[in-house]
Image (cartoon, rainbow, N blue to C red; front, side, top):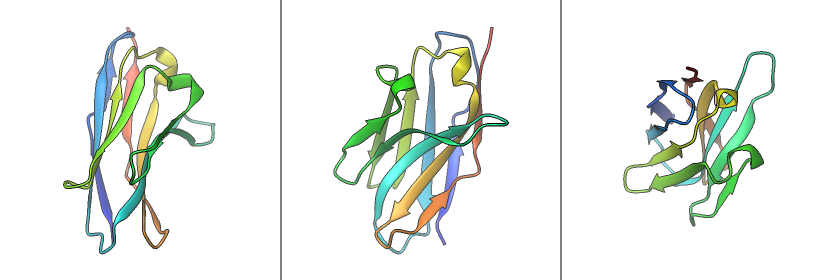
Length: 116
C-alpha cells in the first residue's frame, strides 16, 4: 500500500510563495504520473499540474507561469512551487500518484490559504 505524506501548506499573503512536497513510500512498483490537485468546498477537485516519469508536465491554465511541478525519483517525491499566489488559489491541495500497474493513490490533503 502506497502512503503519501504531504507538507508545505499554510497561510500566505497575496503575491507570496509556498512550496508543497509529497513523499511516497511503500510502492512495490515504479511511480509513473505524479500530480497535484486542489479542491474548494462545493466544487469538484481539479488538476493543478502533473508530471510524467519522463518529466513531461501539464498545468491548469489558471496556474501557468506561476506554479512549477517537479519530482525527485530517487526520493519518490513530487514538489509544487507556487509563486505569485492569489486568493483564488486558496484550496486544499492533494497529491496523487499512479504506479506502473495504473493504480492511483491520494494524499490526505494540505490547506493553502492566500489572504491578507
